[in-house]
Image (cartoon, rainbow, N blue to C red; front, side, top):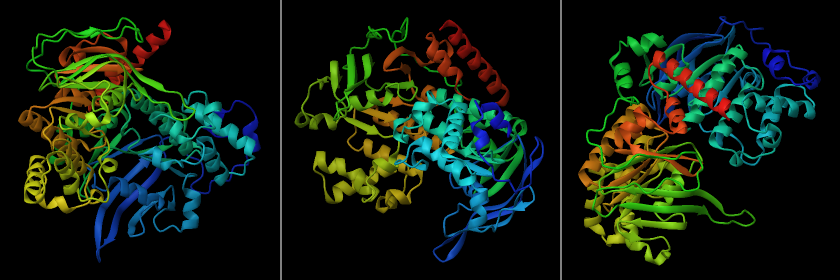
Length: 602
């Protein structure tokens, strides 16, 4: 029985499983070299020639060690890791050597790889919603992994799957076993992916952006889980990420890649404190640091907190000395998702009082499911307001009919979290940008073309890009197109819903700088929804904190960051990873202490 079995078996059911003998390298002890990579290169056949995605990677990885591979999109970090288990596209090839213990992985046949995948090497993919099969329950998918590699009775496989779900702290694992992926939150789906990856006690775990798009509290829980699992199972981890805070929290050694080549390789301490290569220094300089930004001028809004989370009165309306008509005013607003079939209506936001003045940027933060996006969608009339008043630029749209909303649509814009799914894949991006101008202003021909080109100029993209389709652009370019489309009608209010969550730090830095410049140029008011508090601190004059559908604290950015009043805000800030290993250890200890204190109080 393995270490993982011993720690998680609640009975003798696992004895029914006759485990296949692992033929690759035998048992593993902590400190043993698991993986030896020598001169590994990855190439793709594109338009009649070979394109190099990664070149000359050389490193060793020991059991119990975390190696972080960092770099921009397109640097080759993911493809170099996927080549280890033969998951390259059909037009890709890998050369060089990668030995798991003494067994060569490069050049393995499909039949040989079937034994390696999941059994010896497992992968936690970046997006569990696409990696998990939507038509099967999550429990069945873990069982399928177990029975593919081991001779197990269905009852033993189910018991083992529930043990694994319990290990990764899935709430009520017996009930969750029969749930489908869409019935779980993003953090829970990521935990299911980790449970599936650990099912066969692999020697090597490849974690490809395991915390991208997770809010900071869930991210903190996932990272804590991975640290604990590294101690429980003697596995090596390759961590692929663009989040330098996550790297500081997890990595023992770091490989920095640019344009397919390794530009720097060293210990976590060396890379963060004594970086040598200019690109590594640029990468670290691009990371926003929580607490480093300070508001030059604070707006005269009162600081408000709830005495207890869930208090029915909600946060009272803040007092303000501004006489200007607010760009957004929510007065004791409640928002519901309408009834669908037998599913009852769900109230996602309660007693919301929020004001955004012209030209002001307010950051809205909180966990997944707290109601942030709900408020943003209600502000652009995509969700109904069932109580209270919603006033946009002096116009009460609380009970407005769809036919009455056309003038309102000209005054608000929204940047969605995933521009890849919000842009029409069948239209060139120039047509997507020009569509709202044509519908609302009636412009066509050369006039419309000129407006589209000016918008491309404003988001720093070449005019020739107007004829490309969304799939031909990078994530950062698609996000700029989304911003250009949202600004097409020069709105007075912009809702930015997680616009930088899935971008590399260097691309994110350019998009945020662009956002600041555009906000200064156009002067629009903005609700910036994000789980990245360092980004929110950089952009916003005030921060509003949400939890479980309630606003729990609203105040000037500097005060919220430096002196949070509500316990939840303190925990939220303590969960933010920072790109400094020593500081991150201190913050992790602080967060664990806060959580422990909350458990004692409750």
